[in-house]
Image (cartoon, rainbow, N blue to C red):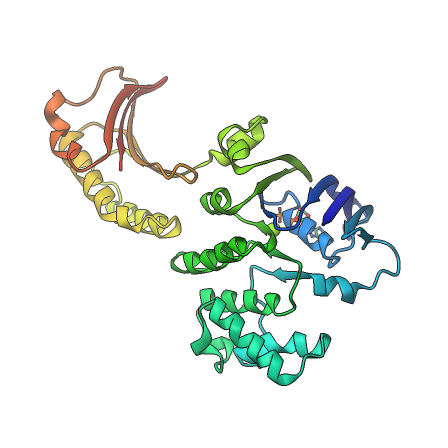
Length: 357
Ligand code: ADP
Ligand code: MG
């Protein structure tokens, strides 16, 4: 359906120097595929999506859509706009139109749909994204998650053959990420062809037929979710998918800033949707620092979250010792019952007590 050959994109900086953002992108995308594009920021993911729908015409190579070269001079771009919908991080709704009008606008203007039909199709789409009751309101009264669901309905109103999503959940409050991802999931089940740039690793693994890992302006590795997440070939892919988010505090004495740890922990848990762990983690930190590891200073406290596996852990690390700083083995019995596991182990630089939450 889409065939990309030797695609490149260079930008000219104001000082005349040139940066090559896409180097040599090659891929084939079939009908009904759901492809998640993952990779570090600044590696050209957005530029690739914008090149595919010619918002940012490429400087080299070609893109064939249904066999037609859309990069050729004179290719009618309005035709391409009908085939491809795009959903941006920042919604881009028309603020002066109601939700319903937002969705009806393009089908009436560009497809010349009669009012009645445009309206009934728009209501069907609102049903699909769960927002029928918001048809008559203006976007300003909606939450971010609701706005993004309207933006998805608006993209679907043109009956596109493929929809491109550029980080559709990145601008959302974490509590609203789920409602948008579940709409995209249901579209995948219906067989809509989609390209999704996302940082949501578990979502990408669950929903995609294929994953593109982009790095340094190329599709560095391409495979099924299983290949990319479980058996990546390249070390850069492996490092990226197994990335661990961390919160680290150095505890030097007993007058450390306890409130700072609490607020840092809360923010971290909200950001990664771990709010059900906040209280337990906080209680354990207190117990460890003031009882079991009282006087063991300095130590490093780490709260870690592996996005892909979901493993969440509290680490207490003490440098320069090779045996457990705990007086006796039964010290942690009271904690053991409340957590998944406790591992006490020497490290290259000292000793670690790792509590898996
Ligand atoms: P990603 O989406 O993977 O984070 P982008 O595609 O947004 O990456 O950007 C890749 C690189 O291209 C970045 O270094 C960015 O600064 C540069 N870039 C993107 N758009 C432009 C532009 N219009 N002009 C100049 N540089 C750009
Ligand atoms: Mg981007």
